[in-house]
Amino acid sequence: MSPASKGLRDPTDLTSMRLRALVILALATGLLAGFAELFGHGVRRFLLNEFLFLGPDVLWTAPLVNAAIFLLLGLGLFSGARLLPRLITLGRTAGIFVFFGSFGAFYIFPQFHRVAALLVAAGLAVQTARWAERRGAEHLTRLASRLLPTLLTAVLLLAILVRGGRALAERRALAALPAPMIGTPNVLLIVLDTVRAFNLSLYGYARNTSPSLDGFAAGGTTFDRAFSTAPWTLPSHASMFTGLWPHEMSADWLVPLNSGVPTLAEALARHGFVPAGFSGNTNYVSREVGLARGFVSFEDYVLTPSLVLRNSSLVRVVSRNRTLRRLIGEEDALGRKSAADINRSFFRWLDRRPAGRPFFAFINFYDAHRPYLPPPPYDRMFVPPGTEPDPRLHRTAKPGDDQRDETTAWAANAYDGGVAWLDSQLGVLFAELERRGLTDSTLIIVTSDHGEEFGEHGLFDHGNSLYRQAVQVPLVIRRAGQVPAAARVSAPVSLRDLPMTVLDLVGLGEEERFPGAPLSRYFGSVSPTHDTLLQGVRKAIRQPERYPAAQGNLAALIQDSVRYIRNLGTGEERLFDLVHDPLEQHDLSGEPPGQARLPALRATLERVRFVP
Ligand SMILES: [Zn+2]
Image 1 (cartoon, rainbow, N blue to C red):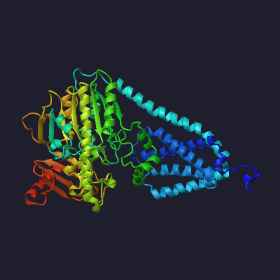
Image 2: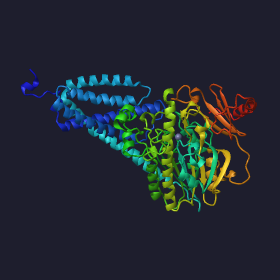
Image 3: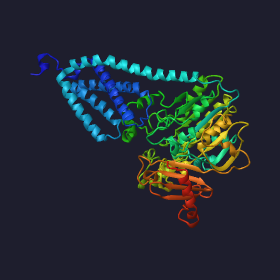
Image 4: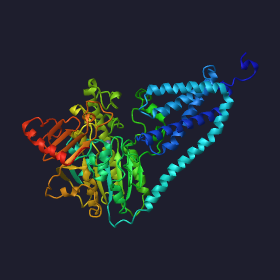
């Protein structure tokens, strides 16, 4: 005889539970799932020494987001159980909670195969379902009611600790700033992440991709051959902040910038500047990778709804799954900050920044980075009429051989649209600086951290080679009355010279020393002797095997009008004419005149011990 027929309610029937009890159970298990994720993050961060690409707010937002997800899930199951009481039982509901909670925690480890994670989570779910059926609704309700207040208190304490700690640290850092010198200009360093020089009208590109920058450059000096030190974000930014070559510091795929090396922000803070950072690249321009050191405030993982959601591993499961994304109709990376968002953050900061002090603002705009998804009308600006975008190609950084031609055309068109969109937002930024009367009192530098490849040399994306497409970047420096206007410098220069350039132009070139030399040496009519410029990238992770950086460390140097690239893993060499072959299509290393130059170039690499 079933319990129901005796007039008793079946304790394993989900509908025997009151709604309030179900809510408590869902919230408690959701918060627990969040803490399970935090445990996983802790293991990755502190035991495996891996980057998480999440900010400290994950500590309190992951449990909260998961609690909300579990609440929705629980309410759905609760309603479903009224229709299908035999299918949706209390035990199965508990099992489903445990399935999602444990899968979310396992998903944190890329080392853990997804299928294995699913199987283990399913196993745990079955065990939990059996246990819950045995214990019944009342026991579960009691347990959840007892846990919930403790879990909520823990979340609240973590929120206070993270947010309060940050606010306190900022206040302290501000209070510790010394008095500034009178009349010091502000410094604004703008990095257009992934914008290669070749695709800007500023450098003669056939498409009008950079009208705002072109106008801005008319008031300053443009460097026609500026090179980043690395073909990807972290070491390149690290060089801009420290003056070091990639091989002289630790910043790498899995390693943050070493804490010992001085940074430009620290140096400027010592002289009363307020350093503030605004990063759109939440992968490799963040506190976690060591680039925020010296900044009083650094906005990387801000509390926007999408970045908060992204803190839950369960949300990331969905947001990283291309099939699910297509179903939702959202191809862009979850939490991506647009240039318009960053501009707004920067303007808000300008409003509340401490009065009477010069600022050092660093901005990283991420809009040109893949997936190439500029907003309309920029998305179709350079797409031939009648061409339908293939959504597969938005995110395809390394297409298969069959897709390559298609991808090259589509990706480059979409990329150019993104660059034009970013340029329009640069225009907004310049106009706002003008409106605030800051244009003339600010030293403004616009550059990029690296380029991008669109099938040249058979490569896509960046970080995988040292060809010029990946390392030649825009560079414009402007300061009224100090930097020549409408001037162009054709000598090759490296972004590693930026720290000394800034210090020199704000009058601190004697007080503070960084590796490198001020680029103001190119402002006069007398051309200085050209230095040897270096670029490098360490053996890359997650690259197709045929890509150069997947085979070994790469080193390149520019010396006497040639560019020499060496794969230190395979010994392969490339030699290009710096002036006459900007796209590096004609390798001279196998031809007699080129061959004759190789020994000297190899010796230079040897001498600087350039092993990135
Ligand atoms: Zn980058």
